[in-house]
Structure formats: C-alpha cells, structure tokens
Image 1 (cartoon, rainbow, N blue to C red):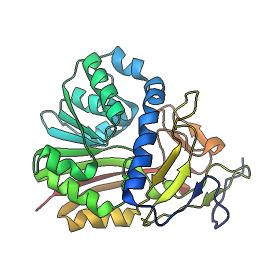
Image 2: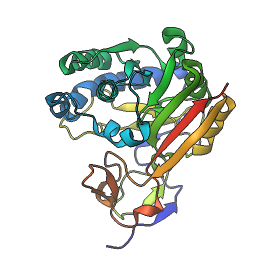
Image 3: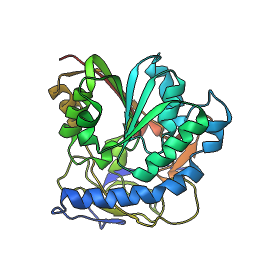
Image 4: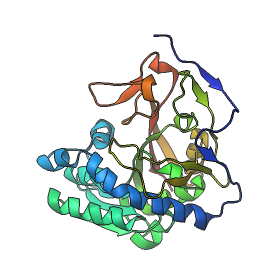
Length: 296
C-alpha cells in the first residue's frame, strides 16, 4: 500500500463552519446539549459489561496509562471531565481516593450508577472545569488526572492550567494523555487517502463549529444534538501555560497510537486495542502523555 501523504490544505471545510464571534455561553450550551445526548450511546458502546465483569478490570484508557501512572494507592485524585466515569472507576480500582468532575448531569447520573454496580466509592461532582477549585477546594489533591478528548472543549488553556495548579497540593502531580493537537488539526478521512491539515492547530478565539451526527463509539443511531464547538491548543501552548502556573514538566511522550479510529481506512487496530496508521506510523503523533509537578 502506498503511504498517504500529509499536506497543508486551505480547501473548503467538510464538516464545519467557523464563527469567531460565538460567545462562551453559546459554546457551553451547545456542548452540554451534545454531551447529554451522547450518554445513552456511550453506555452502549463503552464496554461496560467487561468493566463490570471483574473487580480488577480497567478501562482501555487507564490500562494504557497504568505503567506511567505508577502506584497511586491512597492518593487524593480528581478526574476532570470524567464523563460517565469508566476511567474514574478504573483509577479507584488502582487504589486512588477518587473524585470525578463533569458538567453533564446525565453523564454523572450514569457514572454514579456504574460506580455502585462496580462496588467502588467515587465522589462525582457536577461543575464546569473553571469552577473546580471553588467547588472542590484549593490545594486538596495529590493527583489531577485528565483523559483523552478533554482539553478540546475548553476555550482557554491558561484557565485550565490555573485550575490544575490550584487543585494540587505542593508537589502534587498532573497526569494526562490527550489527543495530539496535530491529530485534531487533520481533516476527516478523504476518498483520496490524503492526510490533510484543515483545522487550526493553535488556540483560536471562538473555536471551531462541527456538525457530527454520530459519536465516536460504534453504536447505531444519531445524536439528538450533533453540533459542537471545539478548541485546539498547540503542544507549546499547553506546556507554556503549565510552566506559567509554577508546574515543572517531568514527562512528555508522543505516541503513535490512539484508542479509537479517527482516520478511517488509514488506521489499523493492534493487539493492544490501539489504532495506528496502516503505513509509516512514525510520521504522525496521535496522542501524547504529559506529566508535571507543582513546584510553587
């Protein structure tokens, strides 16, 4: 198979329109409605039965993270943007004292139910990320955990970095694995097989509006509210924001794999249940793991 080419394109958008004047209440309302409509689909597509079948089962995301997470037993940990709680429950099974925070009431209701069924104790709290320190307390946590597909819903990466630093105790740690901003900048899969840079790599005021009738899990049916507003943040912007808040970078690893298929026929599923480019996967980072420690 011939290797797909990565090229820069400024051609017509395939799934979005931009509105630089969209206000924060608009993007929050759209995104909340979208995530509320995803809950039923994700309960059907998140391998819930496998997670509940054994008391030591972990989500695929946390299973990937586990070697880098290390021993988290006894750590006061908050999972920001926890959604339906599968990763939060998995972290609790590794021995952390877990708090999960999300802005979706339906997702949190599902998360609380799953935690009861899994037999783990997790405190799920409804709030926006920006309000987390006020709601949860400043300097309370040993570990802040953020999973894949979280930062793209936040319009200001500096705000997020400030929240992380505020939540952590001195010497507390941030752990995150995220979709790479290079991946978020690529177009949808194209008939010609090209990997094309179509969307902003850097943070852009107003974000980018997408209309996607289906969610990213394999489940039939369309979303009741398919419109979202997302915000990419360059890797340098993320690191710089954390450094400005007194965080010290301790790990930054770019990965050639991602736990879902974002690029159609260009991807192949490995034995580890991670997706990679079919040919020459070393050409494109798909996710990254970042760790940082609060020094002041």
